[in-house]
Image (tube, rainbow, N blue to C red; front, side, top):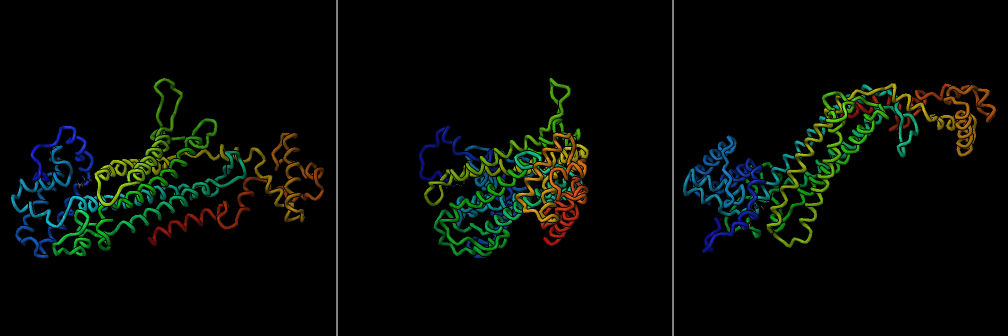
Amino acid sequence: MWGGRFAGGPAAVMRAINSSIAVDRRLWRQDIAASKAHAAMLGAQGIISADDAAAIDRGLDAVAAEIAGGQLVEDEALEDIHMHVEHRLGELIGEAAGRLHTARSRNDQVATDFKLFVREAIDKALAAIDALEDALLDRAEEHAATIMPGFTHLQSGQPVTLGHHLMAYVAMLGRDRSRFGDARARLNECPLGSAALAGTSFPIDRDATAAALGFDRPTANSIDSVSDRDFVVDYLHAAALTSVHLSRLAEEIVLWASPQFGFVHLPDGWSTGSSIMPNKRNPDAAELVRGHCARIVGDLVALLVLLKGLPLAYAKDLQDDKPPLFDAHDLLMLSLAAMAGMVAELEFVPERMRAAAAAGHATATDLADWLAVAAGVPFREAHHIAGRVVAAADAAGKALDEMTIDELRAIDPRIGPDVLPLLSVESSVAARRSAGGTAPELVAAAVRAAREARGRR
Ligand code: ARG
């Protein structure tokens, strides 16, 4: 298709390194859609005849039907999906096919196709985030009052509710959704009509092609249009951070499913066995979500490095933009689906969580808080007194709420009997009613608010 000035053909390795059809065949639907919009515009503008435009349109439908039927024959000599489609169109409709590439270049064509693909990938990611959020909301509602240890430094700090812990991931996913939404809004300008890099002398109508393809408007600068891959970076950044969030949840599932924690039982559907140790029940899906995150972050880095130092406008380096995007998209969709499935089906073990929450005198802060509020002791001193109570409880082999009032008063006479009921883990979480806190009724309200917010979208 570009051989006019060449006497010899490309070397075999040249052909191999140049060919991208094995990767960019995934853009065929977008390529056909963009070509149909372009041909219709050329016809409407009188740049090609109405007959040619109609023949091209019918021909593209026929090519699409063939590809959908699995009949795309890959040929390295035809380089990429754009040339495969156009070549087959030529075989089907003859000379009119040669007019499709009027006022167009593969440079604006590939930018347009890829934007259409990424836009769809964003919509799929958003739907998958919603599905994971649904699973988290259901489990958070179910466990709004289930006690578990809240950790800092992976040491039990204060009791929290499992629902509240799960809602932390809903908060992360909310930001992920917003990042994908930003990426989508920024991406939605159409490069088609920028041609090779300078625009075209034909009287094209870029507003028409932009509207036909669901873009908000045409891009502003033809040079930028064919060299810009910010939209790929935006997608990959949103995907990488979403995947980091999934990886943190995956890590928690791995920890919680270990016999040492025993906070969750992984149902058979989400466990694998060991070929040598019959006792094993492995959280492979969670581990792979954690592993996939490394690859998605790598995909983001690959794109950033690809663009760095690239002079304007198009250079063939840009052909290497697709593998990282496809890879990240596939991995993210699998990860989101696996997390949604695991979260929905995890069997939590509330007794183990409660026992772990009660261990280690996790309500010592409640004692200090009581001393500060009810006895007027400055918090720093209250903290010190509570620390001595912890030491005494340890020495007596008791939990804080098992200490007698006499034992407590021996440490500080200002401690009154009304503090005792506050030292249970249930009282501790119920007391944490400050906005955004862990109290069960706040968790239930947060679940309701998240569902209402979804209804408004
Ligand atoms: N396959 C190419 C890509 O993905 C299409 C653009 C080719 N443009 C060119 N000037 N050779 O980037």
